[in-house]
Amino acid sequence: MKRKISLLLCVAMLLSLCSVPAFAEDVVSYTESGAKVITYGQQIELKVPIYQRSGIKDPIEDNYWTHWVQENFGDKYNIKVTYIPISRTDEVNDFTLKMGSKETAPDMIFHYDNPQLLAYIDQEFVQPIDEEMVKEYMPDYLTYVGDDAYQAGKYMVDGKKTQMYFPAARDDADNWATIIRTDWLEKVGKEMPVTLEDYLDVLRAFRDANLGGDYTIPATQNLPSTTGMRADARRTGHTDPREIAIYSDLQVVSLDWEPIKKAYETLNTMYNEGLISKEFALDADGSQAKSDFVNGKAGVYGFYLSSNSDVISTLMENCPDAKIDILDPRSGVPAGENLYDYKADPIGISTGISAYCDHPEAVMMYINWMAQPEVLEYLEYGEEGKHYNVVDGIKVLNSDYDGPDRFVSTNANIDLFVMVSQTRRDATSLEAMSATYCPIGYEYLMQEIFEGNALKTYIHNYRFTTPIKSQSEYGEDLRARFQSISAQVITCPTDQFDSLYDSLVADYVKAGLEEIHQEKAEVYDLENP
Image 1 (cartoon, rainbow, N blue to C red):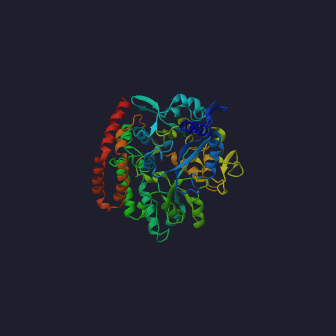
Image 2: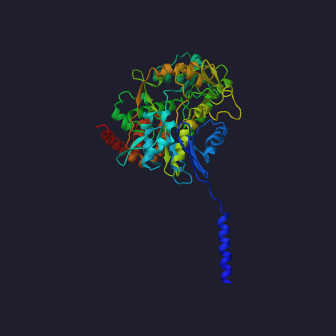
Image 3: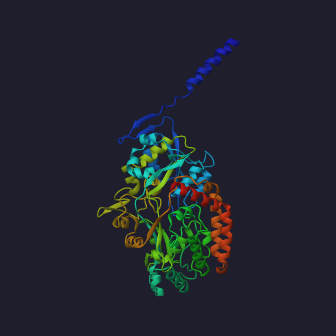
């Protein structure tokens, strides 16, 4: 009997083994450009972060364009592409939380600004990049961004310069627009302000005339973010490269730096004189500021200009007689001082491979696929006759197209291909940028942006190549303190500003900023002997 049972068990085991399906093997092949690609025998998942911005029309992680990427990239290589929304206004904290476990971590992590890229390295959120694999899997990316941009992804790790990020190409294009209601200027008998003093007088006139009704907001303002508090306009006397390296930071704001304090002092004046919204501290993402402007309540508003943005069209629907122009950038600078502005790095966003990623080659395949000309062409502009028309040799987006395959946000699909390109290609000349970024009839705004930019002296932040460990240690706490301090010092009575600011900032410095400054100074001196 025992022998019979043993035979039956053996047969059952053999049958069970035969019933287990054999997984197909991975298949290696090469594209026409020579890029190595893998078609996975067993489907893998690639978790791709994507910015969640205000003004999104469709779910950023699930729309026509993400489906198109899945069909044309994911299905081809048996990869399930899952998009992970990342808050644009709170991205550092968002990434930090998601990197808390393998289950929530995306396979890539990115940022625009060098200090935070260094922090991610120090926190071990990114893994080193195998440059031999880059040569195999990413020839299209390397050709597109160029060697100078690629080399900017190298950092000092354990005493050795190591490739840690894939930088994107960045054209010299600027579509940030600070709009002023010119019809309001006419109503109060004012000219375009060209000094800070002129600007404040203009805002007072807007307020006194109640040009937006009982709820007039002369200038929009939301709760400051670390990336927005640069104080460029107040840098006269503070342009020494070493000083900038230590104090100018878009992630941990040096509240103890004189230009920053001056900027807050102006905001405090504006708040106490009723020149900005009393509820600004509740507007973390800028949505209320936008609402105030498009509904005719506000006289000044800043945003990224785009031909398919609803800012100008909604304003005109609500206020048909409105006239708008670009605010003269000199309006932020006290009389007699120089006009400075921050100059972004000559590379775009930098993308690293998450420390949790099991398939770094899939990340490389994805980024390389995005860099192929035909892929970029479609993601940038869509279909001719539908998403855009060619006018005088320039692709002009159809801002009124609203079909099921419409662009998801006012910046079109930039957040999909941002890993390889900061802007749409061939859109850096005045003519191209006017057509690409300005609604029809408002092309003159780009001319005004160009004229304003010509007045500026630009300042580059220093690019450390060595991680600043203290920034990783104290950064999260300091960022949390920053917004609380911002709200307090802007809203306090003017005669209490100095004492409150100095007191709060003293605690802020002791909470870790002093150590960050000391380490930055030491690293800067080592990197610049």
